[in-house]
Amino acid sequence: MPKSAPSAQPLKSVDSATALRLAAAASDLALIIDAKGIIRDLIISSQQMPIDSAGQAWLGQAWIDVATSESRPKIEEMLADAAAGTAGRWRHVNYPSSQGADIPVYCSVVPVGSSGELVAFGRDLRNMASLQQRLVEAHQAMERDYLRMRHMETRYRLLFELASEAVLIVDANTERVLEANPAASKILGQPAKKLLSKPLEDLLPSGSHSMLNDMLMGVRASGHPDARTVMLAKNQEVSISASLFRQETGTMFLVRLSPMVLADSGVEISPKRSLMLDVLEHAPDGFVITDPDGKILSANRAFVNMLQQSKAEQIQGRNLGDWLGRTDVDLNVLIANIEQRGAVRLFGTLLRSTNATELNVEISGVSVKTGTTSCLGFSIRDVGQRLSADRPSLRELPRSADQLVELVGRVPLQEIVAETADLIEKLCIEAALRLTRDNRASAAEMLGLSRQSLYVKLRRYGIGEVADRGKK
Picture 1 (cartoon, one colour):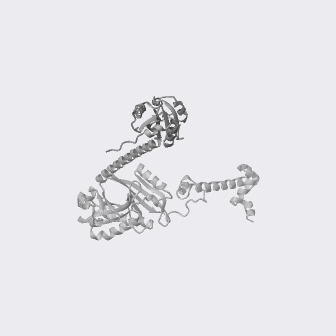
Picture 2 (cartoon, helix red, strand yellow; picture 1 turned 180 degrees about the vertical axis):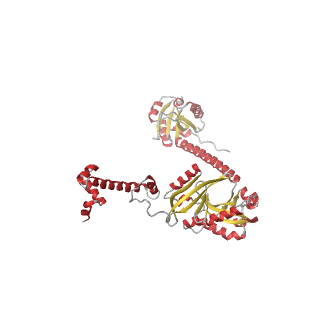
Picture 3 (spheres, helix red, strand yellow; picture 1 turned 120 degrees about the vertical axis):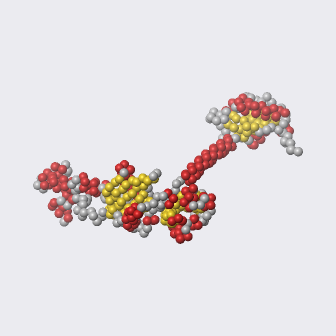
């Protein structure tokens, strides 16, 4: 049997003033209401409720008149329950506010005394309403984030499945395959489902296991991508590259397999083309192939030696701008010119090695498109020994615009302007002294300088007897 609600009869012997004080102590808002539903007294115990000024105007008014229209049926039901002697239910009542939003109050009515007076208890629900609103907003934000993540995962899955390049996602701790796209399944000759959970080294010939372990250990230690070449079954040469990334709390390898020659496409390298590739590999000038953004795809031995590296794998995947020019500006200018003209010849710049050694180089570049992919090829020649000893320097006044242009890229602009201005000033002073036959006063007047300023500049540039006396 359910328990019956406690009776309100004990409050029958309590006067209205005492009942009002008890209600104020137990709630935020307390109202004394007569048998006709008229408000006779009230106490607002919460200082945060914005009805202090309007509360006194409620005295003498019907309770249903001071509440909002949708709350009036609830007040009538509470008054009827209290008149019938039944336990009052807690109902949500809204009061209008001059500050904008309505004030939500949780109310219950209890009869007191013997004259039919009632006490209405009220609890401020604004904090609860604020929490509910924040909860709703947080829930909506979570739904938006979840929907965004679903869309991102859908796009990732679509790209992963349709990518023409073979891609494997490998756990960095166990080195087992977690995901494989159809291109990887095709190049490895196994269904994608059978590739899952297999150790990566089991997918490659046994002779390449040591090389694979060295590559993965290097990538795990340095965090930089690395690439090697392996020979798969059917004598298919493949470039395998690995890069490290984090997903949630784990670390993964992104392993890519790029066939050097597509055995099943019928495309073969002719002996003449193979000979040309060998020549480029052993050429004394550096040769680099990058993607359209300057990321190095391949480089010959000469370029690796220019950077003072030991092997080409150390620079694959890095940007050519890391070594080219004083800043990234040179590479951006070079790529922009190649995009506009298709090729660039004899672009003068600097090449910085790993040990910060600078080489004066000339670069010729070309853009090549094969199928749907494009790449950039750069021929890099060291011209440091070829530069003449009498090329323009900062201590020689350039006699033409071409000589001045030769300084650009080798000397900062601020230094060129400062040194050139000093040189021009010195030449002007010497010319003025020659024209005035070494008359300092006339030379100062001709140059628009005071005599003191002229003497300062003579000492600065070491001109004439003034400089000699200054040295003594």
